[in-house]
Length: 504
Image (tube, rainbow, N blue to C red; front, top):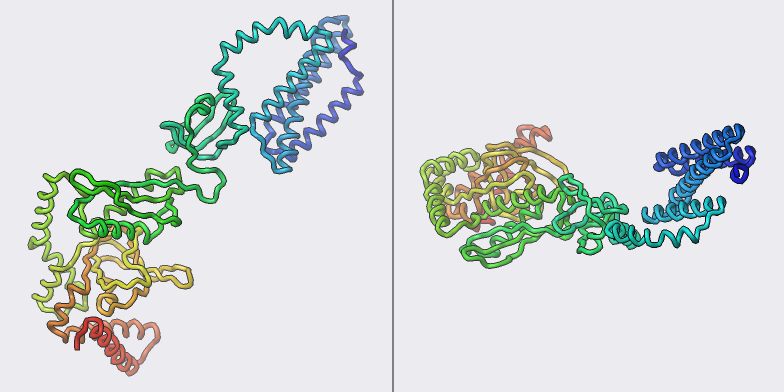
């Protein structure tokens, strides 16, 4: 019996040489499969060792033992060749052809090859395969009935991988579980949530339940639309709320938020005592969904504060808070803070105390969060900002390239050119930290200028002096050149102020 299985040692050597050569090629072209390749090599080495043991047993007249060991050697070497062949076919040949079949197809092919190997060995030993199949039919039925859940998961995994409804790397939601697909195996699908938890969901449930694919792996920018809702009192016009919040969301890019389509705000519903709005945006970084929602809520909060629109609260509290806010607004300490901010602006040095009190009464408190634009290059806005807390950055865009040209720290002011002449902004100003400003609009300053037109001359002179001092340092101007440039600059600024405020 031993002679039926044992080929000449020259043939064994040739088989081993062929196995080593194929394994070397696989190791070069399929470096990611070195671990299963090593397993195949170890199995083949064990098979060779078993052949040697069988030969030794046969030499000592242990024919039955030698036959059994020879069968074991054939099994080990057959499995090794099947595994090596699968690596060469799926990991070398198909990958070179840029084909990536489902993993379960690889497993099915290998399993089918194992069955063929067993049937081949049975045929060598002249075993009646038909009798085995007939005898095991009842056992197979019992096993199939008891393992129906397992078989359901296996068939489900096969269907998922062949259908490719989703693949590893996709972002999916199944019921309450949402995350990135890590693997689709025989038993179940592994999903990694945004918090790092791993959920293994049986494939049978994946087949039966609704699966929402939120983002495809490999796409340029996977997107998911999200929204953050907020409530506002009915006393404030929807256009005021929508325009203010939309501008805040679009001025500066937000990490993890798509710019196309841009964020927008809609009027969602009428509540019992407030109007409900939603800030909608497209999320591109699924791992940072909650953090991005927090940034959106922060932008909404600051935008509403700048517009003088409070978030809605129950009616019984809204009027109490509103009254307290108005009392604090006109308290003496608040006025003193406003006067101190105005006196820190050099162009207002010539104003009287009454004129400063008038300006203090029309100042608007405008806070900004980090990263939001206060002024945008090219826009026309007649507003002066007095910076009382925080730091801002001045950015200049030329031919699509943006660079930082200055940093301004409180206390300071900016935007006076727009308020006095109405000219477009020459640069953008972006908040670096939490910023608090007082905003003065042209309408609040116009009454003073028209009542005392000579203020325009005093302000234009101060602006001209400041501009010429900057040019003198940069260009090295002489005293005579400075005087001539100052006269021309003063006349130019004065003419623009008079034209903008319609004064003679």
